[in-house]
Length: 120
Image 1 (cartoon, one colour):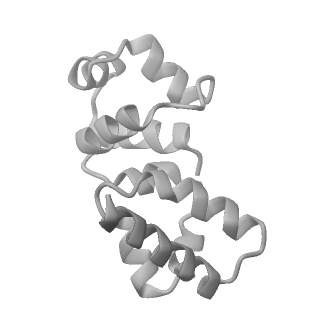
Image 2 (cartoon, helix red, strand yellow):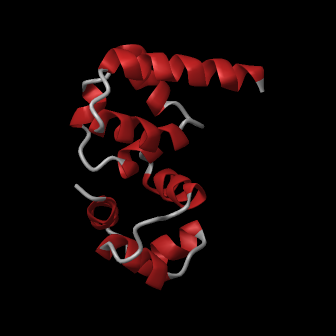
Image 3 (cartoon, helix red, strand yellow):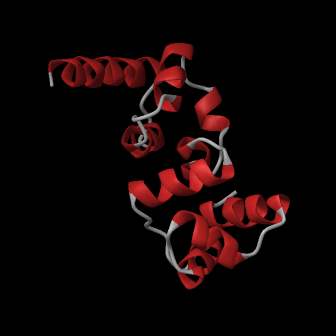
């Protein structure tokens, strides 16, 4: 399911209107509507994090169109992707996976990323 589809379903499940969501996350209802309809498909990291917090889901859930790819990752890598603060790596991993990287290669990539993060 797309980001927009997930946002709309979450809003409907929560039984709230666009204005309520917009007010809670600090954006206009027009912008939230555009996200739901797929007319604005490049939201910022901050926007994703605010929406995820509001809906009580992980940012990773919102960003993945099909969560099956996540389940195919090795457990350590899956945990890393789901951790708070690693939202930016989801796109990198999705692209690498799309380009045929094996789960082992992805895990090695994440190990390098962790080392770099620890050095900062």
